Length: 295
Image 1 (spheres, rainbow, N blue to C red):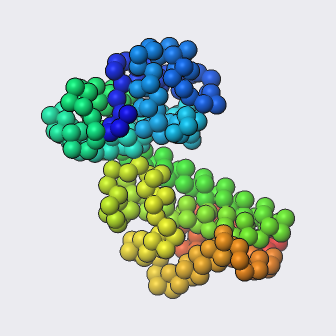
Image 2: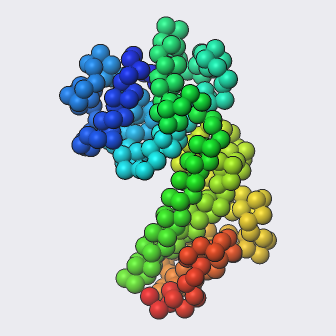
Image 3: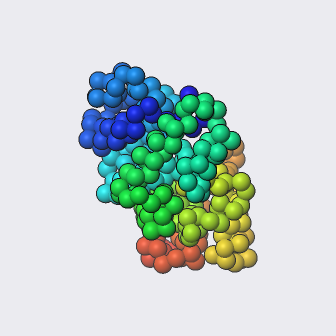
């Protein structure tokens, strides 16, 4: 199926999301699996492609972190809202179904007779992602809830990546320690650029309509530093330090020069902590400079 996804029966949207929520997670999602779990056979292929467009499964049908996030989240509507942005982003700003139909005709290879199915699929997802209300996905309160969820996840990632760096250092794995430490700092930086649904990332380049995860994947380290400066999160001196940290991280990610020794790696981790403290009073900042070298 090319263009925007759709199902033939909008009721299958709720059916498949209930399956994600309550069923056993398969190693691979196929049309046969969906039929065996209550999806009508004549709609199974469409439902399978909808899951792929929502990034619940990969092109090979393997459940993704989005599937797991929806299944385990206490706020499934927010997870679904972000997935909806990925699959139907161009429709989010359209005022009504007539406007959405025009967007569908412009964006994707959807046959005219299938436009009503796209609209009904989109509407069904909107209702579920907005807790059953009739307002469209662009509701400000729900959007902010999704952003808060992303910030929380980024902060958790930052802590986890730095802990990975510390463990790597303890085992003299200096290259992965430096890479993980940079990942920790990058996650923290993205969390501090999340205002207004990552507006600064969306206005830098042609990224309107992208989901938060895809948005961040398209921002490399150099651009991330530039955005921190533009957003006045860091000053000129910090920019120099960040660029040096990024260069060291790149050397370790593409290991041609000799690996850094333990002391150099500990110094790198301490520099990351110092930069973290410049961004926020995040728990990472409470580690003193001596904490890493004693790892």
